[in-house]
Length: 83
Image 1 (tube, helix red, strand yellow):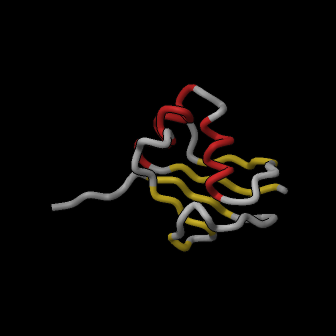
Image 2 (cartoon, one colour):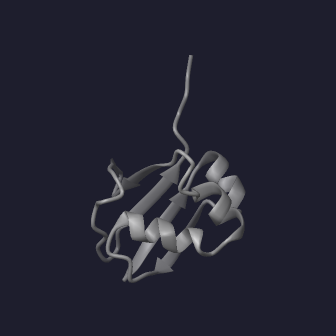
């Protein structure tokens, strides 16, 4: 299936793009994240399992158990801190 990916802040800087289209067979966000980590380089660094990463599916915050569907928009971003 084809999905749209968006990357924000330090994740965007690490992967070198703010968005991309991807053909994937991943059924969940967790599998998608592992697929991106397997690309290596900035993807592996920014999305590593030990790092805090927030994810949204179709502009709704969710966890990685959420199911993907054709045309979905997935966004990855670091947690926001403030003071």
